[in-house]
Image (cartoon, rainbow, N blue to C red):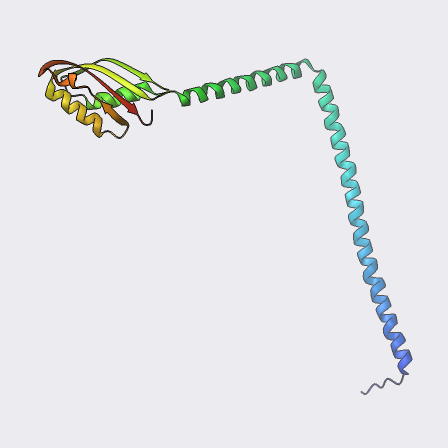
Length: 180
């Protein structure tokens, strides 16, 4: 079957424009409907959230008048104060020198004949002074070599008077602590 379009060009153009107009109106009305639904949805959400906010404000106002709320606020303030105090204590403790660690390191190097009689430490300069007694000069020399080889101690100062007696020797050694 053959279909011939014998309409003049002007009418064809008019028909085409009317179809385009119909399509624009159809799709425009769909878009307008979707936008209207979206705006209505946003409006209802705003109303719902406003109601929720007013309810939360009302509950907060009631809680502020409640004596239990005052107790909770006092406890919160006490907890905050305790946390600040604990942080201050923690900061002070982290800055403190662990003397037990230093003495433990020193004890590792002491041979059986070496005994400690005094220990002092200046945190500002990180200088330590150790007093002690060694049964023999050789035991003291072994102890001194151990101190000099340890990475935690530096600038070990041992006066010559520590080596004057071959036995029953009192000594004094000073050194700096690198990470104490």
